[in-house]
Length: 237
Image (cartoon, rainbow, N blue to C red):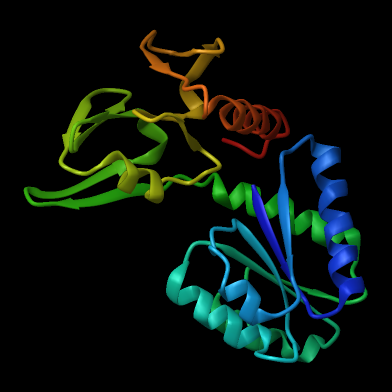
């Protein structure tokens, strides 16, 4: 899970980063956090974060304007505002803020926000894909894996295989990182149906298999370990 901390006060960034590290250690999760001291610097990043802790008042552009611009590029990330001014909370929800936490920060409220983010991320959704021959709507919880097939992708679900004229990379961009991961240049796998794995092969509940590439192995193992921990904590359905 990738987290951005955007606050122009170094002490605030340090405190949030420390709490995020504590949460990751308590829950044995793999969380990478990045610090930004301005909205401009955050907007100049890749903006591929799962969660952004956003300060409301900053020197260059404020948190509201920063969030508004982020929403134009990444509608799915979770934005959690942290501010010493509770009166501004209503403004924050205009940019689809997930939570508003007041300063000084209550660690339990921050941990609860992270718990709730993981629960929401696990809600069942549909993958909708438009192709030249129509629109496909696939229940994400039914997807076992996706396999590249030239310019096509074969999406294997619990009851069928769907051949879609879309590159695997495009499908990877649409699938939530909390549920799926690229295990090989030719495979995206869903954690839900993994029965076991070696260093090179994943075996699913239906006994079909997917490959693990050497360059993908470390990230796959860390992400699957996170999934198992979240499952055991009841954060995954």
